Image 1 (cartoon, rainbow, N blue to C red):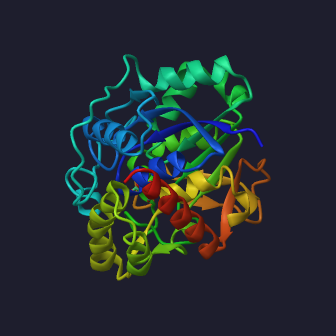
Image 2: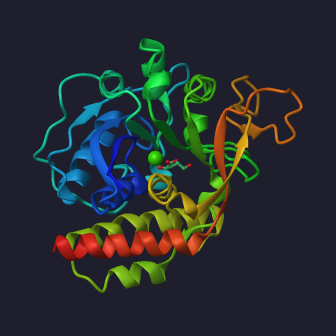
Length: 316
Ligand code: BDR
Ligand code: CA
């Protein structure tokens, strides 16, 4: 199978950085570019972190474009309690030598999708601001993108930011609304599946059998992430949402899917950012996305661990 042309729209972020490492270790993926967005940290920080993670993974040839600094309507909401003030927990990556490209992330998305109609897979693992902006600037990307994998939402699972809202949809619900209603072919990875896959201390210890900057980074970043999960959610380990979303691009059998009508709440009440699916389709609307609702956790975790071991052996 030919490698997929992938653009990663991301807000690194510990699990975002792990997704970059997974991309580096996955021959099924040809990473055409990275666009950064506000979210887990400021866009300045997420851009720096994306560059540093790419450098760590040996992907210095991948162009990085800075995207939106703030949500479309709301104020930014960073997540230092989850990802640390730098966005990468306790990890300290060297100041990257590679620099972002000139130009805005949303324009890079448009340019790439329109240049290769039907060939570009977009993987959006942060708030959807860049993607929504790109749709508004060039609506034809909707017909020309191959598919969009989105990490976001909590369908039947509790939220991780408010009682029912997941972080990416809560931070920019208006962008999520534009994207969800765009007509793009979408595959959603909500908390319903990501929370079934816990990266444990045993998993980490397995990786630490290989001495490498890769395993050191994973240990230093996830130690912080595990402390957050323990303190806030009594979870022993951590949930690595973003690499799972990326993995579905080449190993869809990790999950079971339902075609659903999914919407996001943009009213100003307590439900802001909540995602919900009309399972019985009471409103008779066309299904707008494929949603991962079931998962085989160990298949994903084994894939992730094997790929990280492979990368760690390569970069030691
Ligand atoms: C999502 O929010 C961020 O904290 C993570 O990077 C992930 O993309 C999970 O809700
Ligand atoms: Ca993210």
